[in-house]
Image 1 (cartoon, rainbow, N blue to C red):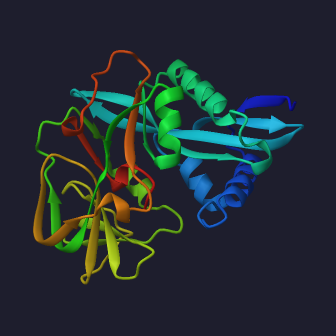
Image 2 (image 1 turned 180 degrees about the horizontal axis):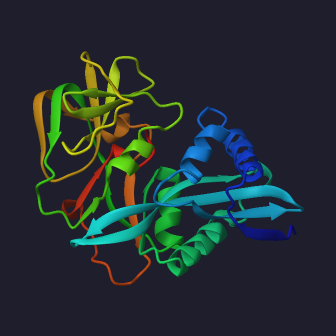
Length: 278
């Protein structure tokens, strides 16, 4: 039986290279896990460095899991939390419960550091583990709309929870290496892997400008993914059926403080800027 050593995730250049190699080898169809991307995600986030754990076998990285700090307004109170993100286990070490051990240590550390919750978007394969083994609950699958025209999402509704963004954090978010963002009528969009489909990331508040973004006038088809009470559509949009989604996008939540309200779908404002799909 292999003995594993569990070590808190680091952010040195050598650690970033290790993580890049593991993530790129496990997710061989994804080119995004470059050292530049991980440096941006793990180190440059203005809300703080990643919180996570690694498992080593005989000095070699066997598994890796991280969350990144986020700030939300929950019931009117500015609250620090964590967004569950990258996880990878080398094929030689899979099936040994390493992810559960890494996640449990991560959440214990996060609580010690003063973080009050963990939020994440889980796919079909991982949702069961988060819910049954790690104490998360399912808020709702994310809605997916695609079509032609415009989608406007009202932020004026009385949400119990909503991410808090400012000029610094939005500026960081929209510098994601490998992504291509631009303006269109006050909204931020991203290219997708389909040349004619563009995903709506967020509507920028009038008080925030991001100079590096360019305007793009022609967007044949638009994609919106998220949870919100009031989604207003002008034009023609379809709710994408579950059978056409590559994987269910399940919004999950874990209360680290044992003091937060239990959230339902109608309580939540969550959109693409709030996680790492684009």
